[in-house]
Every structure is written in structure tokens, then in C-alpha cells.
Image 1 (cartoon, rainbow, N blue to C red):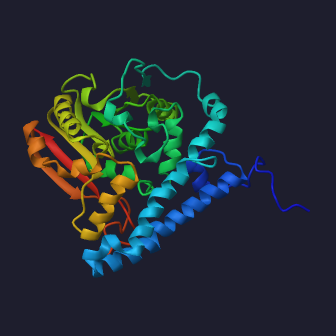
Image 2 (tube, rainbow, N blue to C red):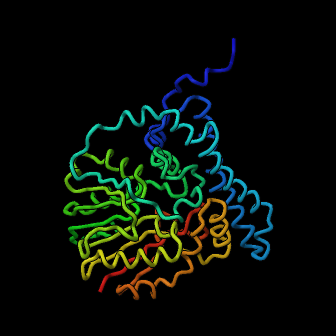
Length: 357
């Protein structure tokens, strides 16, 4: 009897957390491929990283030339490629399921929940390369589905990351209007809507695929407090002084320095006097080994502006735009994330919070 299974046959039910995270159906071979990639990434991020950190900390001048470092770098680059590309990559999975993904969408959304701008031309820096090695990026019509599957379980996929950030930013404050810049597929927007149950939250993103998926998956209970719009963050077209809080998650490092400065100025225009801005993003770590890996991540993960963000004079940039009380603090995306020595490779999350004069 043949030991080979039909690759087109349906697979056994997966772990519920995995199913909820990817939301993309897989045949046997594709599921095996993605599970291999996930397991290899856990090894890369955990045991291999810890070995490299210990070796490079003991010989900081030789860290870049260590065989362990070369192995770490190769795995980072190629496991990411394997996750997205090829016949068993997430792009191919989504494409094979195109009919289901598009047919399952509701035919009509409540008025005001989604506003698209077919005439919007994305900035050149956004289209210059396949950021994160995702072929076609988020501008592809299934880009948001692919991205959602891609970030699950990755170095930015910590469970409840967005909720933790939203709760810390909102706290016990009373806010009525919140704007979420670069909202992606809506995870951050919905987190702020739940953290501030009295507030209306607008999410904007340049990618139509993202705001469309976000709107379609917004729970009905939030339909009257959430709205998504296709718009560019530096020139949003939204009314001046309309918001108590403007926020973003993982947006600033995707933009060149000039665009970040324009974003800060646009944020100041959108906020009422006394309003606050809160960004969750990455800044270079002080640890020389972690800095070496952070700088390498920019190249290996197709993050052309990641290092630009770390060179910006944050205090001066926000002060020039009319902000005061700029606070930059490390952010623990999960319990133990800031342990020393680190338990796993992670991106250096920071909260940047400022108040408009």
C-alpha cells in the first residue's frame, strides 16, 4: 500500500490557535512546509539566538564573524522567504483560496464603516521593495490576508501585543476620538476601541486590502464606534483638531526620515490642544550584540528604513511640531520580554508618547 497521501486531500484539524492565526486552508504538503518553517523559526529565535548572544557577548569584536552569527543570519533571511514564497508559501496558499476568501466577504457593510479611495497613489517608498519579503506587499488584493497569516507566530506576533499597548496608552483617561495610523488589518484599531469603550476610533491605511479586511471583520458590536478609511498617513485629509489621541503600531520604521517628519507634523494638525500621540515602534538597542542583529534584520527582512528611524532626533522632531513632554520607554510585548539576558530574539519595541501644546 502506498505511504503517500494525496496532497490535495484535506488535512486533519490543526491546533486551534494555529487555525485562528492563519485563517488560510492548507493541504497536507503545504501544512507540513509551514509547520517546518515555524519550528525552525522557534529554534532560530530561541536556542540558536541564546547561543549566539552568549558567544558574541564573550567576544564582542568577533561577533559578526562567528559561525553561529552566519547561521543565524542565513536562517532569518531564508526562513522568512520560505514562509511567504514558493508553491507552499503563504502567497500561493492565499491565491489558491482566492475564490473562498473573496466569496466569504459580506456583500454589504454598514454605511460609514469603510471608505476607499481608488485614486490614491501610494508613496514610492511604499512600493520600492517587497517589505518583509512578502511578494507584492500589502497592495496586492489578497495582501492583507497574506500579511495576517505571516505575522502570526512571528517576532511581531505576540498574543495580545496590541491590547497591551492600547490599555497602557488609554489607561483611565477619557478620550472621545482616536485615530489609528497605518492600521493594517485592524487589530490595533479594534484594540483601542475595546480599551476606550466610550471612544470612536478611525483606522486609516494606504492599502485597500487592509482596510477592507479590517472593516469586514469588525464585530457588529463595534460598527457604530469604528470606521476604516484608505488614506495616506502624512496627508490624511481628515479635519484639523478632531482627535484626542493619534496612535500607530509598527508604522514609523517603514517610512524614510522625511516622511516621518511629515507624519509628526500631520499628527500635530489632527490633534486638539492637549491631545496626545502614542507610537509603538522599534529603536536601536544599547546591547552591542542585539544592535548587530537589529542592523542585520533591516537588510535580511527588507526593511529599508528601519535604521533611518533610529537616527531621528525624537525630542527635536516632536518639539518642532508643537509637542511637549516626549517620553520614550521600552515596551514589553509579553511578560519577561525585557529580561537580561534575553530569552529569545525580539525586536526592540519602544513607546513614543508626546502631548501637543
